[in-house]
Image (cartoon, rainbow, N blue to C red; front, side, top):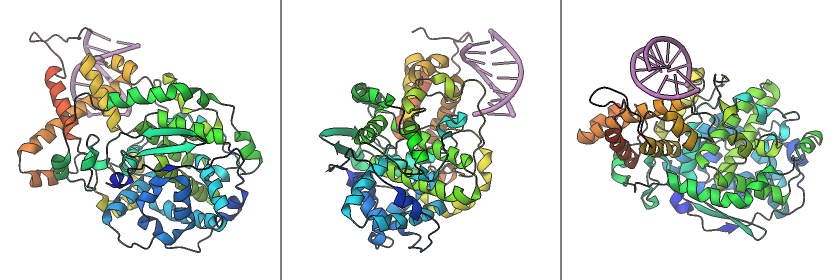
Length: 489
DNA sequence: ATTAGGG
DNA sequence: CCCTAAT
C-alpha cells in the first residue's frame, strides 16, 4: 500500500541540535479546545506525510490541518490510517488529537519552532501532562498485559513497510530498513506487489509471492544487531531528564544525543515487538491515569504523539527510554521479568481490538462501538508475523517438542511467550495453515466468506513453511511405535 | 520443570 | 490463553 509510495529516499534532517526545547507553551494551550477543526481531518491526511519525517510531517499535520482537502481521496489511505488510529486508541481520541494539533498550530507559526518540535517527536510530548507519571514504565504488567497489541503493530507496519528512511542527525545517519509484512498482504518479500488494503484472501493468493525459505526473520535478526552493536551502549545513557520533566512541570529538555539514541534504540530492535510494546504502553497509561479530568487529554495526547512517531519512522521511542528506568534493552535482556510464572494479570481497559487486522477496514465503525467485549481478552499478546516466523524457524531447527529450547534461543528476549505459548501457537498455526490449504482447493469466493472472519490470512509463504514443517515434524511426534521423540540436535 | 492436550 | 495430567 502506501508503503510503496513512501519508499522514502528522502533524507530529512530534523535539525536536532543540542539546544533544549521548551514546550511549556504547548502544554498551556493543549486544553479543552474544541474550536473544532474538521474532526475527521486526520483521516484525509495523506499518509505519505507521516512517513516523511517529523519536521515536515509535523508542520503539515499538526500545524497545517489545511492539507486535508482531498476528501475521500481514497478508501485506501483512509482505511490504513484509520485502522492504525483505531489500534492506537479509539478514534475518538484521535479527534481529540486535533485539539492538540490546534494547540500546536498556534506555536508552529514559525519554522524555528517547528524544528524544535521535531525534537519533541522523540520526546514524550504526550506525557507532558503527567505531572506525576514516574511509575508507568515500571508497570509490572508492562509486557504481560499487552492486550490486543497486535493490530497496532500490523497496521503501523503496513503504513511504513519496506520504506527505507534515513534519519540524518548531525552527520550521523541512521539507516533503518524496515522489513516487515506489508499489512494485510503479508507480502514482505516483494514490496512491489503491495497494492491492496482489503483483507480479501483473494488478494492474498494472488499477490502473495512465495518467499525464499530463509525468509526475513533471519534477516532482521542478523542485520539489526549489527547496527546495534555500536550504538547499543547509548541505551544505557544517563538516568534521563525524567526528573526534570516532572519538576519543570512539563518542560522537556531533550538533547540531540538523546533523540538520536532513541531513534537508534528503536531501530535496532524488532519493530513488531516494539510496536506491540508501544501498544502496551498506551494501554498501561490508560490504567495509570484514570482520573476523568485529565485522563482523556493525556491519553489522547499520548496516542497522538506516539502515533505520529510511528509514522515518522515506524519505531517509537518507548517511554522506558525516557524515564531511564527501564529501557527496552534492559527489559528484554531480562526475560524473567515480563511474565515469569503466573501472569501479572493486568486488566486492560477498553480497546477492543479483537482481530482488527483480520477484519476488513470497512467495519471500523462497528469496531469502535463495541468497547464492551474488551475485557474478554484479558492478557493476550498478538503474535506478529516476525514472531511467527521465528517460531517456525525454531521448529524447523529443533522440531516440535522442544519448546523450551526454542523459547530460550529464539524468544529469549520476549519475556512473554512461554514455551507453552509457543506450542499453542504452533498448534494454531497448523490448524490455520491446513484451513488455508483447503481454501485454495475450493471455491475461493464462497469459502472465503466463511473463513474470512475465522482468522487472519497468513502469507502463503508462511503457510507453506508450516505445512512443510508439519510433515517433517508431525505435531505430536510419535514414532510408529507411539513413543514421543525428541529430535536430537 | 516440561510437555501434551483439552477447554 | 488457561488449566491439568503425565513425565
